[in-house]
Amino acid sequence: MQKISIIIPAHNEENRIGKTLETYSQYFQQRTNNYEFVVVLNGCSDNTYQVVHEKQKQFGSIVIIDLPEAGKGLAIKAGFADALVRDNNLIGFVDANMATEPRYFYDLIEHIGEYDGIIASRYMPSSQLFPPRPAIKRWGSKIVYEPLIWLLFGMSYYDYQCGAKLFKRKVIEKIVPDLTVRQWAFDVEVLYLCKLAKFTIKEWPTLWYDRAGSKLKISSGFRMLGSLIKMRWHHTALYNFFYGTK
Image 1 (cartoon, rainbow, N blue to C red):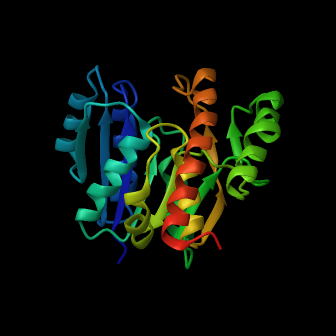
Image 2: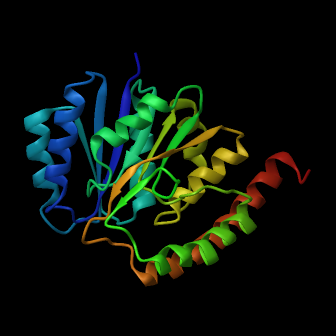
């Protein structure tokens, strides 16, 4: 039977994390006993720890990691490493704001099949996004962000940044030592390391709710672009060192 570990990075999420853990716990309790949620607090200065601790006492199957430094990538990497300590077969992550409701994350579990990983997509033809985003925002990604990722990494997905991804244990074991991105470009790094290791990744349509209070701002977008370039240089040098330039 599959044992599932879901990492939830949480930076000052006192107003949202409680509802997320309650909803996810109730849903998963109805479907399997072999699950855990690893909540990784990163740089929290609010009451997030106390909220998560209360839900831990209420539901169990919740692991708490408290990191002093903020960073989504940093948090998920720490969660990955912690999940590997136990005998989890499937390891993934989801955002704390419940933009992905538990039934849609469970879709990933049910459809990973023979693939090494499966990622939720907000932009596949059969996906749904509520409320609909302004066309200019989507086209900004298609004109700048996605071509840059193709140019730098040779990857083509409908959606790189959706905060719901799931992988088999062997994938996490392989990529964790090489993860370097501490913030938002983390998702691209995960997918690129999967590509270098020749893992098969499936993209799956989802229903996504855009929640108020997003922490990804325009300035974060510019930092992400710089992070992508730095990441490409780092992993090219690392790959060439171990495998040569062929």
